[in-house]
Image (cartoon, rainbow, N blue to C red; front, top):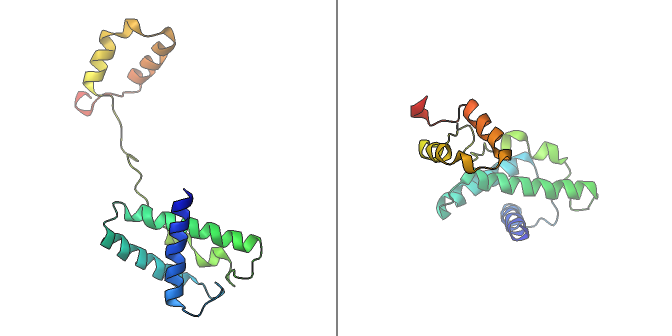
Length: 144
């Protein structure tokens, strides 16, 4: 986790120093810089073959936002002049496709038939759970 955080902040600071070579603070950081950073992340993600570029960008922005909020909170001299909420907007975050989100899940027919064949071996505690799964319609799509 710490390695990932340091790597993400390193990416941002490298980007920022390439953009502003003489910068010693983040005073001039703006939403335009964030948009350029996002484009840079997209390009490098494509070059490196990152499997989930949206997640890659999202995690960089979350970590960067955490740093900026921290610098704001402790009123560090390198903090940006603008508040963090005016630098990183909600629209900057890409929609992250969470694995399995929005998909209806079913218990496969083979599992259900095994469950039916061995239901007498289940502890009484699990019987209501099995009844609930059946009543909720967790069957394979072709059985509906």
